[in-house]
Length: 63
Length: 134
Image 1 (tube, one colour):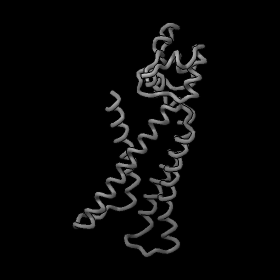
Image 2 (tube, each protein chain N blue to C red; image 1 turned 120 degrees about the vertical axis):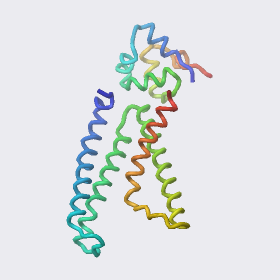
Image 3 (cartoon, each protein chain N blue to C red; image 1 turned 30 degrees about the vertical axis):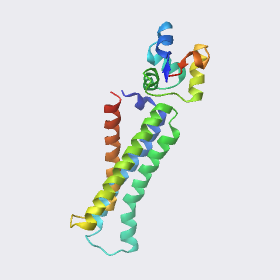
Image 4 (tube, each protein chain N blue to C red; image 1 turned 180 degrees about the vertical axis):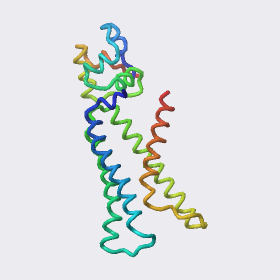
C-alpha cells in the first residue's frame, strides 16, 4: 500500500527517528512503512493519523 | 548500539536467554564428565542428563516470551518470519536426513541436534530476509 508518510514527515522537518519516537515504534518500522515493505496494523495506522491530524485515507492510499 | 539492545523487551529476553544458555553449556559439560559412555538409565543418570534438556527448554521459553512481549509490531513480524523459516529449515533437514537414514547407511543424526539446527535456521532466516529486503 502506498503512503504519504515520508512527505508528511519531511513537511515537519522530522527524521525517521523523530517520527518513530513520536509513535513509540522502532526506526526500522517507520522505514519499512515508508518504503512500502510493511503495512501497519489498524491501531498503528490510527496512531499515525492522530499524530498528523489527518484521516487515515489522507495518509495511506489505495494501490 | 543496535536499537534492539535499547528495547526493554529485548533486554528482558537477554536476561532470560543468557543464563539459560550458560546453564545449558555447563550442564552438557557436567553430564559429559559425570556420565560414562553408554551408561545404563538410572534415576541419577537420567536426572543429570535431563538438566541440559531443561535448560534448552528454558531457552525456547525465553524466545517464545520475546515474541509475546515485543510491542513493536514490525520487529515482531520479522522475528516470527525468522522462526517460521527456521522451523521449515529444521523440518526439511529432519525429513531429508531421516529418509537418508531409512534407505542408506548414512550416520544417524542425534535428535538433540534439532534445536541447534533450528537456531541455525534462524540465522538462515535473518540472511534471507536481509537479502530479500535489499
